[in-house]
Length: 205
Length: 434
Image: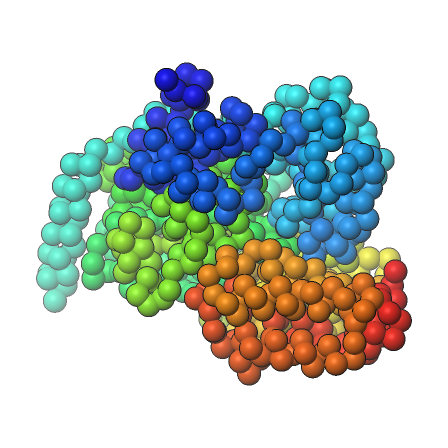
């Protein structure tokens, strides 16, 4: 009995098929597990382990290395405020303090209604619009306290549900079809191209 | 005045809001270079890249052509593209994956053809949700167009490209850690030797790892020839480069300018580029090449933006980032925040990096927040020296990868350039700017 919903399970199997080794699908599968459950639940981890031919402990240990994976439940909206160098120079620390006050939760924690989790992030590579804020890894580009507060209101009222989907970095990332170059074709191609190149090198002499 | 008449090689579609779509890409010369490349022998394509003297745009600046030729003896199994851009204040690959993903993919296919590789992976930083969507859409469209898949554009060459999402780890920008991430493991860098990707890369097989911007240059090089690319710039620094300008400037942004022909002053002050320091204040320092790079003072503003030019002065162009600090910026706070970053992002394998970064961070924290001591400066320099003995440039390495040896750059620079600022923090019992 799959813990993943049929659609997620289907996407997971498609992803595994893209890699020469199943374990390579670990990071995308963990994104999917998080998309379904909002965080990495034990059942989600178990399913990723089964799909990648690893153990649940191995999956948990791998996931714990990466900042984007949550091993405990988080809010529907994960708000990340950058305070790294470019944002620091644009008042990122003060901005983060303001965000904590507006949301009513400490940095690294979740609001009591379960709607928001506030994180201090490292550089998000959008430094020309500092201080940089992401909600569920979407750039929201609110660089002033007033625009941030307006954003929070909009999120609370569900006005931005289309722009900022809950959880899931890959929610709109779907490959159309599997691999197209058959293994045998690739092997033949390599033999042909090596032989042709050797011949050209020979002729050049 | 800045020299701005060079061609825009990788940012030519910046003016279009739909530069990421296949229709715009085809309407602006897209996939012409790939069709041309497919009429050439693979080694002829590689020779053009060699002639271009294209230096890798990821940070290390290794010549892309030479990276490829290291592999000519044995066939390459995989091509891996590094789009895990995480060096603080670097945002040029973010621009390329979001705004011109087809250009990247065309470059990837050209490289794959030159190397005769049929499996390529594009590793895109996980935090680039929109970038991931756009690169995947572009890959889907490229398959539909016949540019990807079996026997592309009716040629004899087949290739699959897989878009792989990262998940938030600076260290995965290091090529061997990136490979670990692609193998579904923790991003622990591998020790070199023996794990040079060219020899023992993805799944233990010969692998080429190139940066997004490096790949994005290839369509232009194939269309215009390696010699035309090499005619731009000077010395070892050929072509143009994307510079990500940030910090206390009026117009932060990504600018494509010719290598060497422009200086830091041009980039920061030209009204068509950075437009000067914010509020007309005095420039205090610049951080060239990402936070791993040693800082420069205003005395080096007229240094040309070239690989060797910057290297000879004891820093690096690195990731193409330039951060401006002005007279109101606190250098202690800046160096502390950069160290905090390294401390958070150290993978933890090597003691000097894991322990050293945290130790330096704590000493810097107390200087910035009260509790600093005069002897802390010597302590910090000693800690830095333990991580990168001699504090020379390029740094000596005591760790598996260069994250460790990057840690001392900011702290060493700040102490060497602004000792009085540190003393003021001690005397004031915290940051005088607060």
